[in-house]
Length: 432
Image (cartoon, rainbow, N blue to C red; front, side, top):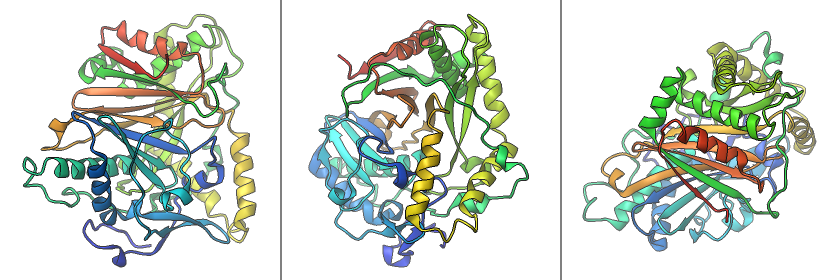
């Protein structure tokens, strides 16, 4: 498939189909009403959303955005994407819990949906389509288009087209960056992890807790500990699990916090498809009463060991080698699905939770003055009843926890620990 670097061409200039990237292969197999494999990115404006204008904005944007104009099809040997020429999906006022399953047949076979509530625009994306990089790009352009419609006089110099510099590259960067590694079978060395259990919310409900910090203050706190912002936040989360769930005691299993790593900077890629790798922040308590400094050092050392070009090469080699196995290519897709699902279910007790940082939202002038903040949310998966997503905008950092559990003591400790460092925090939740 040729690279798509154009932002103005119409769909007739693009291939009518595309292979799923290496990560995307998993999601159609495991997705269900109880495990949607969707994520959400939301932008909160400083004004009430007008639903009719948001629908119009989406309808203007979508023809320019081929990566989101795809439908999922099942072939004889693999799933694949086919260009979707159906009417754009309806933009509706939000009425369900976030991250619910996208029923393709009810959504004109599009793999995303746009909803709104009050001042908030929500984009929810089926993960097979793209990761947070692509989702954030689409939401930014949707927000810009909406603001052009709602403020035509103030934004009269802006045109109804994609922002300068936006590229819609649809290469499979996993395959492009693949290099065979001798020890790729050692890419994932992990035993069973601590699995957080407890009384669950009613089926279909999701607990949401947002914590909003001043970015400068939390960066200064991380600097005080001699670590990066991301290392600090992951360390605080792991320590919170250790103190609240394990009560500061020993454990035969480690706390394994999954941390997705955006690979674009490592491999010079700007693909809009998925392109990330999973590493684990590992901490196995072998004595009572570790201090936070001790846990943070263990977590940071664990991440540093894994987030290297050499190790990422190994992970890529392992993942892509399995996909390219010549013995698997002629196997019918329904048999592959059984095998993929079996392997996935056998690994759901290897991870305690996930914490991902999407980074800075990158809202540009002249739109930034209309935007209050953004947040991101991860749908929950089998074996992981707590997840967190981080996004920054205009000096504010928002971390959002999603959970199936009634007990939110881990999240409370997380926010309390950071607040005790003198960092200002505002917390919002849908809990009573």
